[in-house]
Each structure stands twice: as C-alpha cells, then as structure tokens.
Length: 272
Ligand code: ATR
Image (cartoon, rainbow, N blue to C red; front, side, top):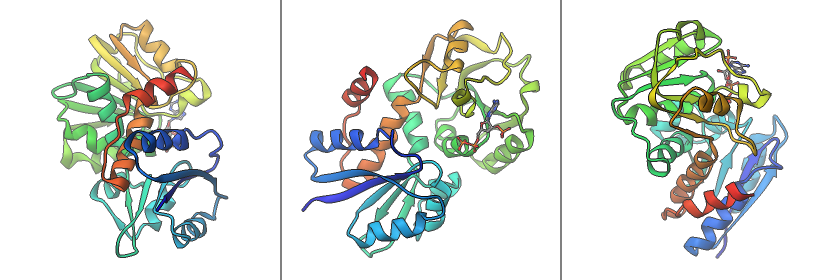
C-alpha cells in the first residue's frame, strides 16, 4: 500500500522536498507519495489533524511552523526538545505523533561526510542566534569542537543560547563587536542576513589558515557570506543545499527505516 507524506509550509511553492523524497523513494524502492501543502498561518494544527486522520504517515515542517509542530507533537525526541523546534512528524503505531528535528544532524553530516570537514578540536564561530542556529548546536557540539562562539546582532540572544547549551560543550555568546582579535577554523552563517543580501560585520582576519565556511542558506548564486569567505582566504566554502538534502535523508530514514544515498540528489539539484 502506498504511504502518504507531505511538507507543510507558507510559502511552500518553491520547496525542493517533494523532488528530493520522490528521488529517494525511486532509489530505495519505497512505495510513497510526497506532496507539498500550503498551510494558512494559524491553521497548522487543524491541517495536521486532517492529514493524519486521512491516513497520512509523516510530515516535514518548514517556515513558519517549526515551533507549532513542536507544540503539536504528542511526544518529542530529546534533540527536538533541545532544539525547541520540529521539522519531522511521524505517525506512531499507537496512533500518536512523534516530533523530531533533522536539520542539525543534516548540517553536520553534510560537513563531515560530503565535504570531508573535520570538526573535532576546531575553533568554531556561529553567526546568528535564531531558530536555525538553536537547531544545529547539539549535533555540532557532539562532534567535540574545541569551542563554539555564537555571535549575534542582539547579544542577549547569543548569551541565552550559550547558557542553554552550556552542559553540552564549551560555548561563548557575544556581539559582533567582540570578534576582532579572534580567529576560527570553521565559520557557520546561521543568520537570515543572506536573504536580504546582507552580511554581519566581520573582521578581515577572522579566518585561520585553512579555515572553512558554511552558509546554512542556499540559492542559485553564492550568498554574500560565501563571497566574503572566498575573498578572505577560506580553503573551502559551501552553501546549505547539502544540508537540505541530508535533513531530508534523515527524515526519510526515520519514516521508512532505510537511509537513501544523497550524493546523486545533491548533484542533480546543483545542476538545476
Ligand atoms: P531563523 O529561524 O532563520 O533562525 P530567526 O529566528 O528570525 O530566523 O533568526 C534570524 C537570525 O538572523 C537572528 O540571529 C538575527 O539577528 P537578531 O537576533 O539580532 O535579530 C539574524 N539576522 C537577520 N538579519 C541580520 C542582519 N542583517 N545582520 C545580522 N544579523 C541578522
């Protein structure tokens, strides 16, 4: 029997998730459909109830519903609880809905498996302190970086995040004005500044020799952060397309119990 899945978002028109999951299903022989559904703001729970009552097996959740999905889930995985957000809902055998988040594990898998970057023992800088950053801190800290500095325009949010995850590793929160004089091996842009073509104020000598830079955003063109990284000596620069495919693969594995290969899908999306 065919099992039904979907992504809920607003907007959702340009979501690549249906194409990614359809490719995974074809490659693994899993009998599923995967649709995108535009959900009105304020109507998330109603739409999710309707989806699961109609026999739907699982949902991906994108902007702006990740917090609502967190509240909607009857049970949460530990990593979803720490992230404060849910991007994957799964119908359980007992009829309840489990909430999980795969964004963070998707990002670190892209860095370590696809890009071959080492994180253990490295000095890491994360730019931004919003939901996207909160979602990736736990899997990042699990790889034992030497330390993680979270720099944010609103300093208080960086301080709160660094306190919230303090038990998981060595974390420091600060404003961008504290960056001069510091150098890093890995810089991750988790701000939404790229969307507006903007860049947080970064010192020219921020990158150590051999440093690598990752933008959690992606687009048809390199982001302003990626251009900055290239101009300031980064040895490797990547956008978040691989993260998108890897978080999808993790959701697929949760739902279907089989992990799809990602490389071909990343290459195909890159070519579009
Ligand atoms: P998301 O879920 O994508 O993380 P968010 O929670 O609204 O969205 O967080 C956006 C992040 O991008 C925040 O860290 C924000 O900084 P503030 O906390 O000071 O608002 C950051 N951001 C957005 N535009 C920015 C800009 N032009 N320069 C620097 N930081 C920016």
